[in-house]
Image (cartoon, rainbow, N blue to C red; front, side):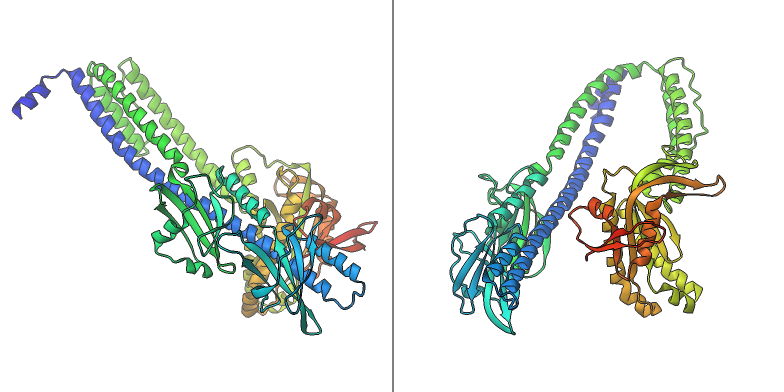
Length: 581
């Protein structure tokens, strides 16, 4: 032991500095690398789990939406075929074929008699469909539902079954045949879009068989059995709602990350699986980077050890004390190192850095204060732009294409007359808080509150012409929120809350208007007046829009025309549309 210590003591200062730097650099780097990689892996796992859950939700919504459309079309075919008011059989079949065409994923509709015997098959377009055979056990007990027929060796047949009812009696059955290949293609496309490969997303049944979705390549197939075995869950639980995300080993011993969510109504489950090597690709790159950094650090330490040994340690200690003072946020401390070399330059740089940090903290605090105040009145992006100096609060505005929404509470005036001011204010605060959040979530700007009415503007920023769709979506969310809260409000304030909403789209001057002492960020133009007039025409629970809104919103929303209506302040009539629920 004495010999070893003597050997270390006899080493040169350059060697000691090199060994010390290696010890102080490589060991902490190794420890921090292990911690960072662990934290990074946990973060990547959380991100992967969130991604898989999002993909599962997307696949479930897509599947349920497709089945809902097909079920609705099948039910409409049954209604047409059982409608006694249609005497012409050719017209009846033509109308039924149109109903089949309403659901893109419905290939055909098979017509069965009350005894379950096949009568006819109505096919979409020029498509060819094999005869489906007798109705059998697929006859439902309720008017319409979805059944899955198939064997372990044959692909499933997805069918929507609806009864043809006339005079209270079941006269026959309509079986809608879904396009399984099209549905599988959609699931595969989702897998390629989200993960860049097939076989990452699939719909499986209780027999752990892939129902929808293209299989993965060899050696990369889904292992649902191992996934369920990891949690000791039985496939029979597909009939109950549950979801799980976990890591497991497949049959080949490879680690995987998987998410499984049941679809109880179908006794299926949506499964997302990915190999860990694919999900955690960034982790391997980080390991390589840490190893490279460790090697570079050893070389730097060997060179720097000899250089540092030639310098006095007092200026270094002084700089350490200076950095400690700055760490305590004592930015008034100044460097006292005057060695005429790099150490003096470092001390001067640290001093300038402290000044910059102090100024930056003040600027950050100022921006946070400004942004916090403005965000209560303006959208977050506009508040940030003003706080950063990218936009101004000067008077003036710009001409823009915008969509304006007015939403007013019906029956509020009688309530306000009989209620205490505090109760009316409490109700409006609760209502406007949520309506404002809905507007901001859809990228709009709350312009002002006028009594029990809220005015919002969409399209203040360049949104590639999506402001009409955003405004209509916000109006739908407003009505949903009011419908969900109506019962509670009725019990608290004896107030039946319904919204009348008017939406118009067109050019307006948007900016800061008023005086230098009092201004507001708003829009001026005929589009504002038209939206306000539509709101006054709207019945409780009704949303009225102009033709420009219908054209800009696109096919995602359903509208029905109310014809041309007189609008106060307009010399000519305006065609008005109602948003269908």
